[in-house]
Length: 331
Image 1 (cartoon, rainbow, N blue to C red):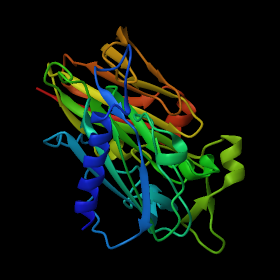
Image 2: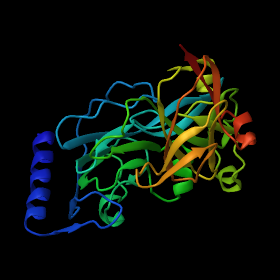
Image 3: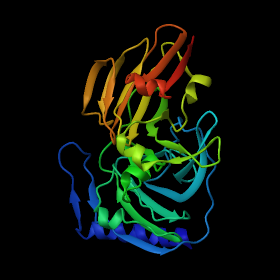
Image 4: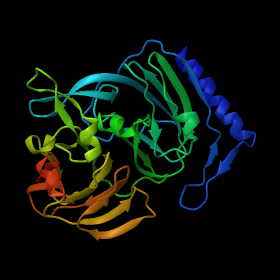
């Protein structure tokens, strides 16, 4: 029944677009028309959580031109550093939330179900939508459904936008959405996705390894833990494989909430960087990619020799706090 209602909502949106209630986007976007965005809130029904996947992997692009995004808001304990368990607010039980993959012109059909203890919302940086409609706070036990059309290619953040936004992002409510250009990204490459973020933990009373987010620390922006994909030093222990002479493409989002990312791969240079992942925003021969909180970039590089290549945020206080991983290059 839920899928049926979703299909009806999509059909309605397309019908609205066909009747002229849409706008054509100008320079910098693909030639697509964006229909009016409408939202429906209902009582939450049952749900099935998809299996968690490795967060650095770019999911296969779904077939067709409608991308169904089912997100469940859940309170979960997650590991953010060795022996540090954190009481997180999540999309689908993980920090970051699942990587969403679409292409320009796709309809992104969103079902957001709140099974957490407080109200939450979602804000897609890739969408053109009125926040009071699409990004409204969903009360516990309710579901929000809306659709939007992807007009711009790139790598974008999504996150909870319920006040205080600082707390909701700091506590884990963010993820990446990749919108492919109509003609794809170009040459075949090894693709990796990285979401950088920081945490501000305080130890629970009477516990040795159970932490929660401290709003006072969040406001100070003095982060104690910095991560790529939710776990400090995740890829130092488990280096990511790459091949000598093979193009590597990284999709990087800085979820913040407050620190800039200075994404750098030691031992190579990015031959091409696309600001926010838009192919019209190209810079060549880049040593370090500067990404603001809430921003993103796509970078491409190729290594010439086998070896270990660290990747870091070149703000080294954040590197020491966990923002470091390794690529392992083989012939």
